[in-house]
Every structure is written in structure tokens, then in C-alpha cells.
Length: 392
Image (cartoon, rainbow, N blue to C red):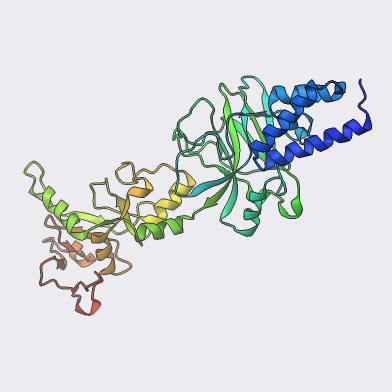
């Protein structure tokens, strides 16, 4: 084994630290200068064999620090995916629940493991990644683990190998890495924030173990800014609207269709997801039914397993197509909290059916609410019912 003189070893350590600083700051210009300096040293007449060896290794990989820096121990078993910029890497489909802010470290390649297990360890330390300080200052910023098919260049869903697990500092992370059964796109990134010790610049290790894979995956850590279902529900409230007159027009249009025999229909005032009374009656602008679901309940369901399908008709219902139904909203505002349903007539009028009405042999009807100018209740300038003028 060839020994390296002390002064040369000190020079190598200084070089490594310089490269590490350039890498952490993503300073490509500085990195190029260092590379040229190494090239010059390698070709110089008085270069020691040890320095030449380091230069050759560094230039061959274009990342000399990875070969000689002590941090390499933390990255054992991991392959780095080259070609990604500071904010690059696999592209994931957009979601309203979080936005990608800063990538932590390199994108790692999970090589195919058809018969064996493999473990990738990613070091996490605040001094190495200043963006982590946001996580300590604001709870809206979270550190999440993402994984995707390495053979797909399109924006894609999060996909972990079927047999995989995540540990942080040796502790198991409880997370569903498979999503909903037979539901592609229902897997969420894994939030490891609460498992990390970021204060006092502690060193952490996020370990990903996987086995029995038939293809490569990309693994990457991101600092994300999250938005809660409740906050998104507020955006829905102030966003798209399905006007009352448009709903009545659609009901009347269906009633006028000679190919369809129309009768009165029952409208449930309970959310089909939570079975609670609707708070924010919502549906997609592509839905043709008047039955609504509650915005917050729907968004909570999507946060747990994103599918973005209407729970009533199963049509695609992405966040930007969600809208408040003002017709149903008005019914909710003019009925008792414990009322579970109303009856909608073919002309768009609605009525409350009491238990006594249900027991009448002649099928008598409850109070009918129409939409003529002489309504039984008055809509104020802002669209709110005047309870004093309401007749039940």
C-alpha cells in the first residue's frame, strides 16, 4: 500500500473541501475551475503519483469529491443519476397538496434487484443543505421522499418498488408505499420530517431498502411546501361556481327530453364520503348530476390516496374543476340542520318531505319551493335567504 506524504494529504483534504463547497452551492463555474486546475496538476512535470491518481479518478467521474470525501461512506450502495440540475430529476404530476421547493442531494438510482436486496442511504444535515432551515422555521415545509420509474421521462405518479421500506436513523417509517390496490397514482410521497433530528446540525441518514425489482427507479428527497385540505376547501369556496339558474335549466332540459320519462328525484343533503351534512356542496364542472359531495371531505380523501374521481359518477374531478353548486347551497341555507334530503321536481322546484307526508296513503306532498318572482322566500342582493320571509 502506497503511503501519501503528510503535506500532500493536507492538500488533498483542502481540495476535497473546496470541491464540496462548490457542489453544495451548485456553483458550476467554480466546479469547472477546479476541474481545470486538477487537469493542469495532472499534466504538470512535478506532480506526485498520489496527486495524479486523485486527478485521474476525479476527472473520470467528473465528481472528484464523491471518490475521496468522507461523506462517501454515507452514500455506500447508492448510484447517482447524473444529468439532473439543482432542481431537476424525475418529473412528477402536479398536485395541490404540495409544491416542490428544493431538492436535497442527488437523485439516486435504484438499480434492478431481481434476486437480492439493496439499500440506499441519503445523508441529511442542515449545514450541507441550507434549505432545510425552512423546515425548522415553518411547519408548512416538509421533507418528503419521492420515487419513480426510471424509464419514464413524462410527468408521472409516485411509484415505489413493491417490496420496499424506509428508515430514518435506524427507525422504521410507518407509511403506505403501495397506495390503493390496483389504483395507480394513489401513492403519496413519504413525509420523514418528524423522524429527522435537524436541530444542532445533527447528521441524519434516510435509508431506503428494496428488493425483487425488474426495473430501475429514481429516489429523491425534496423540501416541499404543503397545503392542507381545509385550506384547499377555502380556495374551492372562493373559486368556481355552478350558478343556480344553470342547474335549474339542466333539470328542466332533462325533463323536456321526450326519450326520458322524468319524475321527481330525491336529493341527499349528506356527503356520500363522510355521511355528514354537506358544508360546502361541491362537484366537478364535468358532472351532469345535481348530487354533491362535501369539498373538505373529498379533499381529505384525495390527500390520503389521490384518485381525483367523483364519488358519485366516477368521472375525473381534478382540483381545478371543482365548483360550488349554488343551487344546492341555497337549499342547505333554507333547511334545518337535521334534514337529510329534499325532493326535486322536474321543473327545478324543491320541496321538503316530512315524516308525516311519507305516511300519508295518498302520497301528499310537502311544501313546494319554486323560483318565480313571488317566491316564498326572498333572496337578498348577495344571494343569502332572508329567514324572516321564508315560509316552510
